[in-house]
Image 1 (spheres, rainbow, N blue to C red):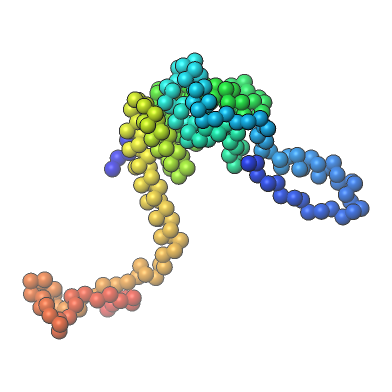
Image 2: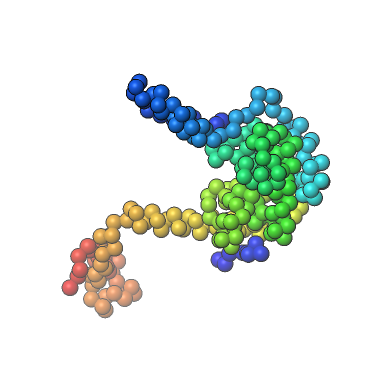
Length: 254
């Protein structure tokens, strides 16, 4: 079928091997610098995190301020962090709307600690959604994909993103959006997700066949076991003593 178009916990840092006693002093500055470089994950603040109800109460004001549908902001928050203001992804995304620090910096938020503030996180993430809505002409499918996979991936593939995570994420956000009362058209986006999922599955099947299929199986030959006259199904005798019309073999038949 033709594809529809949409316009078409911080990780544990492994310990370095111990230096010999006589080399420890000389290498201390370098070791400290390397350890600091490896420790790239933010640390959640010690203050209590807001409840789901408190977060939900914050969303209408920030959505109205930036002209974004409340249901869309709620759907992104639900899919990204499940309303956990202290959430940190394995990739380093932070807070309610799982913002990467470089993305937040584009909107003037340069402090990683600020991204744990629910109001700042919601404001920054909603501003990012608003910019994507402008860029993609309110095409919710492409906006949601771009929020997860990045604009570059969406643009390079002409919205044909086949990342499993992005397809699952897009479907989840749309389902949340609909349950929250969203009214913008999203069926074309779901159709696109299902089509792309099928494309991805077909590609996976081809890769598996290429990896695991025994090429010798492709050399099987079909040999007629009866003369041409008897190959007519109407003339083929059925019964316990009848012969098969064809036989399979692994060698070339004369």
